[in-house]
Image (cartoon, rainbow, N blue to C red):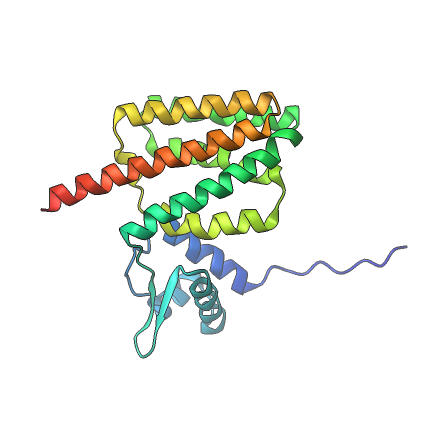
Length: 225
């Protein structure tokens, strides 16, 4: 018999990190808000040790800010950082597409097509949460197929910093049509196993999102003025 290592139970620390990250992504913990360690411990039913370890881990990712004598708070992201993040994510998405397209299986392609169809149904029903869910599943699937752990981790860290803004819900109708059209182009490139083309589409897709966000930020500034 080969030597088999015992399976270790997932640590409380890892569970706390995932839960806190999810709350930041969903906007339940808003940028700039203080993390009430005692209340979080009570909500998660954990002691302060795993909670503090989890907060320190998120601070290392840049999602949380630790301030001496003031505790921890959710990191705030500036307009410049938001736009810069899209540039970096675009590069990561492009590389993931180049790696994923040549190796995608028919079963994986069919799964992405199913997500795409569900995404369109949710958009038609004006269910934006559902739209974002299936949209993200498509992009997540491409990274899974690319099978590069470092690439996936880099994208997750950057993406989490901006997802809680949920600004894409406010984009104009022509911008929605552009996004959906680009997703349809992705399906064609995946079906053709064409990595360079898929990479170029994904980079262009994220450039479009960056412009959409810039337009939204501009509209927000005009409203507040």
